[in-house]
Amino acid sequence: MPNYLSIDTSAHASVALIDADTGAVIAAHTSPKGNDQTETLAGYVRDLMADHGQQGPELAGVIVGVGPGPFTGLRVGLVAARTFGFVWQVPVHGVMSLHALAERVLELDEIPEEFIVASDARRKEVYWATYNRQGALTDGPHVAAAATLPALPVYGVGAGIYEEALREAGAAPQPESFAWIAESAYLAKHGLKDLAAGKDLSNTAPQYLRESDAQVPAFMKQAQAKEATA
Image (tube, rainbow, N blue to C red; front, side, top):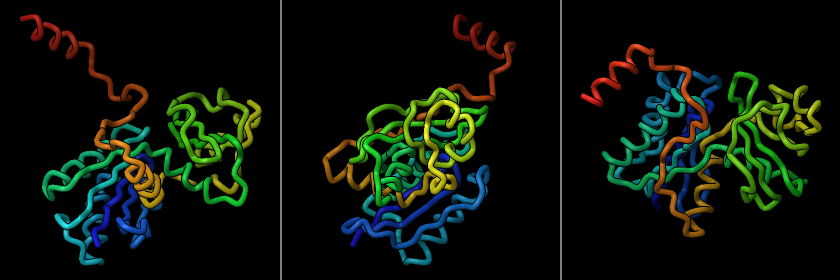
């Protein structure tokens, strides 16, 4: 039966091989640290495919997290997924990375009527979105200071990093989720639901939500402007 390759690099490098018919996780691996997507992703995919005798052209498709997330890490996963799709001639499906966190909340014994998932956006900010108890997105994604989030239960690594600020704002960080990051297996779980519902996931544009820290120097901007008007 065909399988899906799932990739997310919005936080850490994360890959999974998913049974396309049942949604079962055949195998998955997530890096224990962030900021190593460039060095680790290709090797993770190679080993995952080789260990399970999976040929790229035989995949049902590639599911990739589109963020939100930092520029460099997020771009690594998106470029890889698009390249695999082109070389193997299989479809590539984009899924918002925060959906992976929401899928973990849906596995809990008690699911709030409304909740927030949050990942670390650095600069004392979080990437966040709001969901209802059925797992449907109701607001977001956004990037904002943790202290400005609504007074709701908050899940994800962002809740742990900024626990104090969230509590002061009236939100309720959930300790059981403080280590949660966007993982490819959960990303695929949401993506397969969307595909089954007939949703178009062909858009793989990255959701950065803010400008890069790597700014173009002023003299380069001036040179570019002169070239454009020449």
